[in-house]
Image (cartoon, rainbow, N blue to C red; front, top):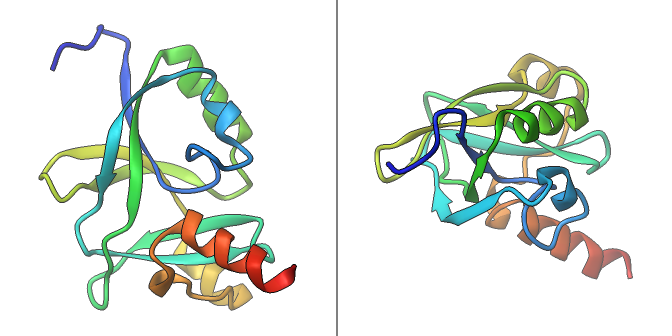
Length: 136
């Protein structure tokens, strides 16, 4: 795989994507390329659209688009320190069969707060672009 021993491959699919406001939280991590999950996830807009909330589901899952980055241990630790409350690192399965770490969100909290399901928008960046177009 040609990565150093402390390098961590990470799947980004929210506000740290290229062109999104939190991209700087990756601290110049190496961009590997675009990727998609298998169709086993749902995507919600948490905290009034402040950040994405993703969880794995047994039914009605979608494939979430994102990007793969290679982070040093320090970059990884910093990224985790900048994540919103209740988000946690967990493995997601990509459509290539590869498993990578991503940030997920407890489904129970999504349901508790009734955050909108935005799975049909085509990903976080597409949702934010659409939301910006509507509010302008």
